[in-house]
Amino acid sequence: MNPRAFCSFFAVACGLLAANRGSAQAPKLEFPSPSPTSTLKQRVGVTDIEIVYSRPGKKDRTIFGGLVPYGEVWRTGANASTKISFSTPVKLNGHEIPAGKYALYTIPGESEWTIIIYKNPNLSGASNYDQKDDLVRFTTQPVDIAEQVETFTIDVGDIRDDSAMLYLLWDHTLVPVKFEVDLVSKLGPQIEAAMTSSEGQKPYFQAAMFYYDHDLDLQKARKWADAAVKEHEAYYNVYLQAKILAKLGEKDAAIAAAKHSSELAVKAEGPKSGYVKMNDDLISSLQ
Image (cartoon, rainbow, N blue to C red):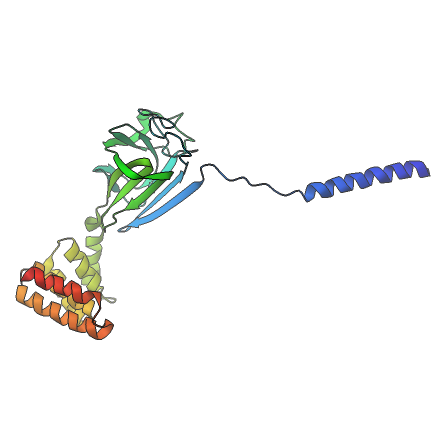
């Protein structure tokens, strides 16, 4: 290779090397999503709920009746359809839903919303929605709220052992859906089996509390509460004992147990213990 050709080749090679280095050093750009994805996980009783959805913002737009038209199927968020799953069978506004994963669609209206639990959770949006694949659909009434919610939100609140509320919130609109699980039929037999078993430590307090809360066999609840107190004479065990006695109509015994619970609470936590007021309230209700 003659010197002139070699110099030309060397210059081209250096240029390619510099270009490759410049390309390798270019920063990777990641832009924020205008409607970021969110995953909500919530346990109600012994049921796990998971909701995956995208959260658009209001951004000075008219939302319902504008960006989201009335009377049309909405994917209940942005981007892909909203996914909702339940680990056990549940009820939504009284409608039976088997355990599984679904899409959550809605049809917004000025005075009434239609809630749709859809069998196919994998649609990208509402364009291929087909009503024949609805599992259930039902209506609920939206509520006007004073505070503006900037970002579309799905939440679970008012949680009890066997119920909760599912809320859709955006702009000045709240859409409530009642969520229920049949906890007693699922957990009741398990408690009975555990308490009659000859093996293992018995969950006396938890079993008694469950039976008390769900108005089950109060004599069994009383027996288990007594056993909990015998194992560990703690103020919370004695307070549960007092509540069960009160529900059984044994006022004098309930008052005596409540007073004893307060004495134990003061010894354990001091005179400002919350159990002192709880016992005082129980006593007042019985006098």
